[in-house]
Image: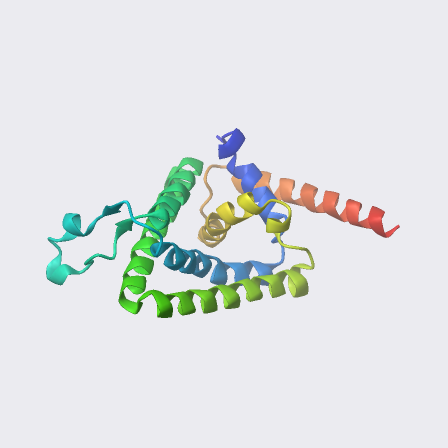
Length: 203
């Protein structure tokens, strides 16, 4: 059964899907969305910490994590995303949450190893490449402005989960029976509404 309100996965998925109906654009987003999340966590790694996790993981061989894992905005950002995805759908959300925390750990370790200056350069380069690719995907293939121009928070929050569900759908997964059929109907309706508005502006 679908959920309502903030946890209405069909509504969120249909909103994002209406801006990503072209297969090439979807593929571009599949390749670039998670690297954007990863590189964002590199930026956030250097925000002030509240708690150092190094003592809690000191049992790991050779001090694997050292002082890389810190309770800061990067961890809070990861926790919010992971919790939201889990609440949307426990199965796919659990996988998404695991990926979020894997990105946090990976970004923390990389940032700690590279240092502030080099890590920021790597993150900036990744952001430029990935965002450019996505805007080109919308301009050339989708021929529609990105979802973030209409709802920034919803678009940025849903993007990683959307591409993950797109990949899982290839393997036959859906959160519950009838989910994809319901979403496709909503996507078609939203695209038609957008096309009608666009036509009215032209005429």
